[in-house]
Length: 283
Image 1 (cartoon, rainbow, N blue to C red):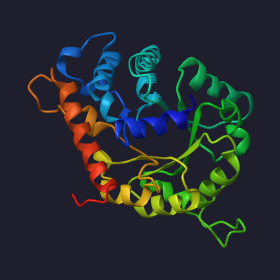
Image 2 (image 1 turned 90 degrees about the vertical axis):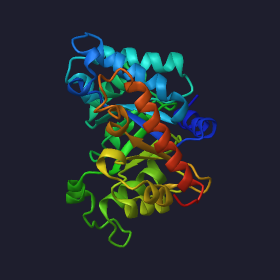
Image 3 (image 1 turned 30 degrees about the vertical axis):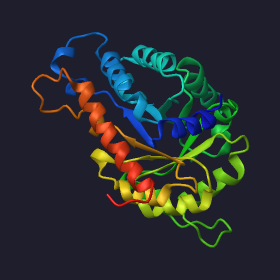
């Protein structure tokens, strides 16, 4: 099953637009995991199993694993998700961007080594830099468009001469991906929740294309504005990502033994709030 088909089913079956980002930081783990060689896997596995019925996808961030020499635990985690929760797509958040044979090896890494359903990619090196990812036609290629960091405007909001009346660079990326690069229906775009006006503009440009929207929770993105700006005609089309606000919802508890249950509560609250606005109700 293709990434987009799997995602579409997850939206419907789970009735959820919530994506849980898996950004494990051992310094923030509960005390009983301290010193364990498999602590990163066990922490993320518990979060996954506690929230799987509440999400449309999981998004492990590769840097949080690689920084702790835990790539083997990332492989194990993705394998666990695919075995225990095979209907939930896994997005490898890697933001790869290179050319030629290096780009090809990054595609092999994402889709063959880790077995991810989709990967985040930087499009600013041009189409040839993403061709190796597009060659895996059943996998998703999620391209950076308007990122959630304030500095994103330094380049992404530059006005360019593209023949479209002086559009902004992120608008050009959105239109280019939707109109030319999405030949096999496998592309999506990253648009940060901290910029709801830009989410709305991207939705206007790309029609039904899925949007991965980081930035709610710890980064302060507004759920109401995000959903209203980014939902498609069927009330889906979004993967609204929250990481730290869910992973570390247990912070301040006595010993963190119930960290997975705390994550579940936080995920359920986020999903339910998303769905209130998705249905057009007031909070």
